Length: 299
Picture 1: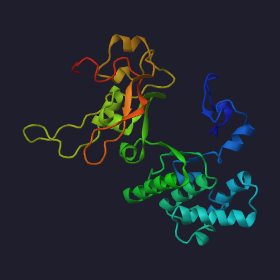
Picture 2 (picture 1 turned 90 degrees about the horizontal axis):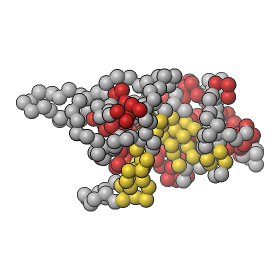
Picture 3 (picture 1 turned 180 degrees about the horizontal axis):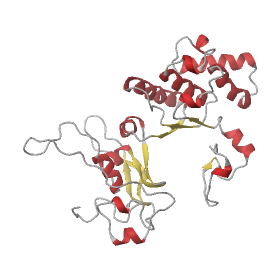
């Protein structure tokens, strides 16, 4: 999105973020203004700090329309704002259009953020923790709303989250990141049922599981990942997960692994128990010894 000031942003000159033949990492400001908000939009993490408190929610929806949809006059922008509020299931959209962010609940503010992002019908929607600070009921409503809008408008959604439950519920493909690097990619079935990177496996092992008991009737201690994420100012030479990995070997310390294909992805099994079907995309892992090929050492 290129929203941060250039003086505080370091972009590797070799970087490529390609969108319809345009490298967004090196595009000029005029090109980015045409794409940002129109072709690619974003839902930010905290709506109360993202929405401007001194403007009505209707004005903030219409702002994007004024720049990206010049064919709409004032009445057309107003009608589109009301239409978007109705689309995200805000009651009494005509009245809510004239209200300020502090007059809305947390769930309604998040719906307004979705309306702003979708008002120009973008091709890609980036959702950064869209359910943070919302209770479980409202979270489920927001996720269902986003899924429905994705199908209705044909918008691709990039969901950024640390909530594995949300990932399992709404995602098709997953990219797991650690210390600024993609360390594993695959379908939801791949990541949750046959993880190949030690970090992914450790994440899944740390999720509380109902009814898991030690033999003898006592509770089992919840697994954790020991240590802390390395500082981006002092990264290790080899694998960035090496200090916390129970499968570490000499090569992991000496050489950073590349992201390589280790097989083909699998789709979710059909309801009814039929086996998972192969997809046409690979599973990729950044590890010298991806699971289950790692030596069966005990920490």
